Image (cartoon, rainbow, N blue to C red; front, side):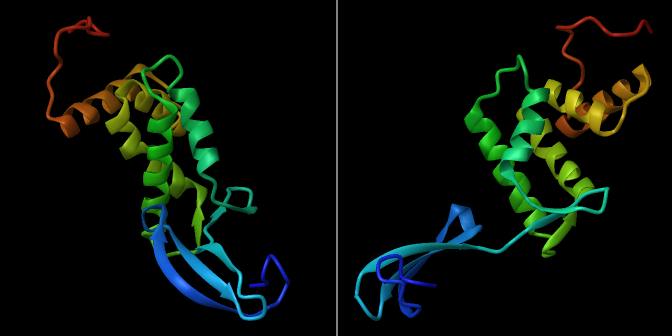
Length: 162
C-alpha cells in the first residue's frame, strides 16, 4: 500500500480491528518514510455470477434497490433495508466462496425479508419465484404461517371462499 502523503510503498501496521460487523478489517498504518499515519479498510472480494455468465462485484445497493420495490408503501425504513442488505451479504459470505450465483443472492434475501415485512416478502417472492396463480400465493402465505406459527388472525377477509 502506497502512503497517500509521500507515495512510499512501505508502511507498517500499527493497529488492526474488525469493522462492518466482521465483513472488513480496519488497519491503522504508519509510513516508514514520512512517519505519517493513515487508515485502510480491507474487505475480501465477493463476486456474483449472473445467469448470462457475466461476473460483477456483490453490491448491497443492488440488494436494497431490488427489495425497495417490494417494500413500496410499506412501513420499512432505509435503515431497515440497510440492515437487510448486511444480513444478505453475511449470509452469502458464509458459503466461503468468492463467487456466488445470483440465484443464491435472491434466496438469501427471502428469509430476512419475511421477518422484516410479510407483504413485501410476498411481493418479492411472487416476482422471484414467478408466481402464476392464486395457488402460488396461497402456498407462500401458508409457508409464512408455518414459519411464524400463526393462524390467520381474522383481521382480513379470506381471499377465497371455503
